[in-house]
Length: 501
Ligand code: FAD
Image 1: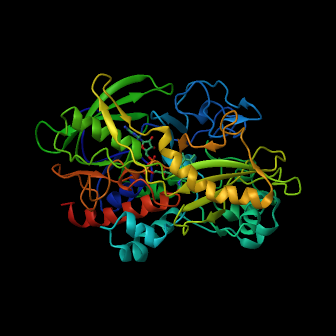
Image 2 (image 1 turned 60 degrees about the horizontal axis):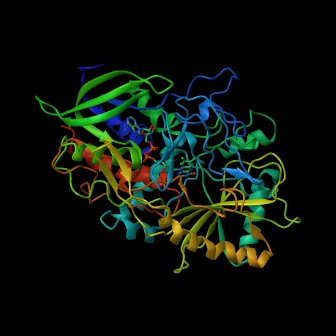
């Protein structure tokens, strides 16, 4: 309520926010999360919480009147359609030269994502975050994050036999024939549940193609893991459909005054509120946190934030591409939505790539192999405040993804030439091969040990912390949420031990 004073306020309920909430509540601190999205706990008129995958409805998208499907085209036409404006689970936020996909709701990105839970290669982690003790990370905090998230591995015998992973076996075979290494990828989707789906014992989610608009079962999203555990302490309050708009030192009594607007399910502002918090944790995601901090600095509310705030943003080198397989290599009408296999060409010095073999769960045989490639694209961008609009933009230009495309081409050109196959040019536009105008993996903008101290504390402002993907310097070489979670675990261990008196 407006006028309240709280000991700890967390902005956002994704990975960084959920870890902060668990560790603060376990330390006995009354903790409040402010989340702009809704709680995904009540079913719609079809009895399901989340929208179906192939016929997305208002629940699928954040405040849009038309869908913005990542694979936007098929066979010469757009696949998008009109929907009702609603506080849906997937935001496609246009940041100038790139569309940034993000989850919205209690659980943040964990609601929408594919659950791939990958611990980064140690050598690369040490390269990108040299100030972090990697013995501690790999000995303590990555294992702690994997356990907290409920990461599990697919039963390999089942993988080899089920129709639902034929697409992945074809992707593996064609990669290996061109000399590329492949590897199984862990996930937070419960593979025992998936086997029961296959056996017809439980309601299908992954095997019904659900992902990106939410999974109605099977996936251990944060509301089922970290946030559930934090709630069980009795010390956590989550306020939904409230968006934080301002953070500034409180006029009296110390702490910070936090302004927010309450929205209805169509996104209209219905109230504005101000509370005071002793400690504020920015966990609004790479884009959300960076936008807020850059605006607060430019508007003079937090003028002493370092110049590194808003710098060093990257798209984790994301590039999507599809290939048309030969007629004798069908990928299957049945496809699990949860990827379990990746092509690992990270050791190629001329083009490091880790590519997920992604499903194309259209419900019919299409002979398509789809890939989400994570490349070592070195390009970075900054968030910039526009004083005439009062909004924060991102400097990323579409051309900055060319290095990522060039790296991915080294893998997929080789596979095409070996297999005598071609790219699908109808999936990301009309005659457009590369899905390079979007990212699922926004990273950076408030980099650890540059914009913050080595544990996420904002200098000059005791009690302000950054705890999400904005700490990671633009690229981590694999899907990012395990890294974000483990870094938050590490930073919170130090903060809980030293900063809570
Ligand atoms: P987020 O999880 O984005 O959480 C931020 C939260 O803050 C959101 O809930 C948001 O609504 C809220 N918020 C933002 N601004 C405000 C504000 N001003 N006030 C109040 N609340 C606010 N990663 C993987 O590792 N594996 C995958 O398989 C994978 N697949 C993905 C698939 C999709 C479709 C998408 C979109 C992402 C995927 N990712 C995947 C990426 C992963 O989900 C993100 O890296 C991760 O969620 C980022 O965590 P975070 O804590 O930084 O922020």
